[in-house]
Image 1 (tube, rainbow, N blue to C red):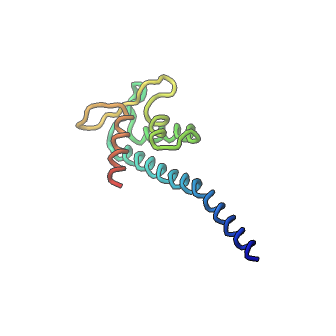
Image 2: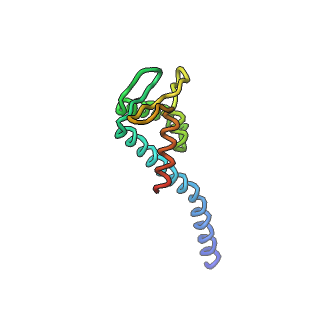
Image 3: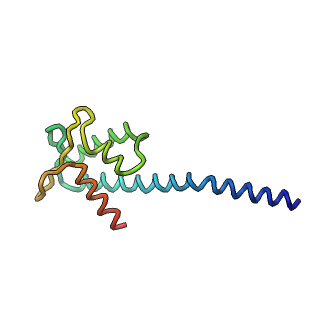
Length: 125
């Protein structure tokens, strides 16, 4: 009976240890989604203009477009940086960088603008 109990304890320990990487990935995914949500809210509330292939778009139009690309690339995105790269920084068709124009600031690539906000957000956490 004692051997059986020891075997069960070992089995439970092995099962628990095998779940740790999965739990870690779920936590990472939740953190990534929280960061992505923050960036989308930040853009929505920014009052900035998004420039795609030479056409100006409001922040809410930009978020709509970014979300469409995010849904398309979702299986390829594991980090917030990948989200920015695949969904929010350049045209898939032309390869041209998306630009952002914010009041009182020089125009800049959206990639740089979003990465700067991501860094600020992470330091705040």
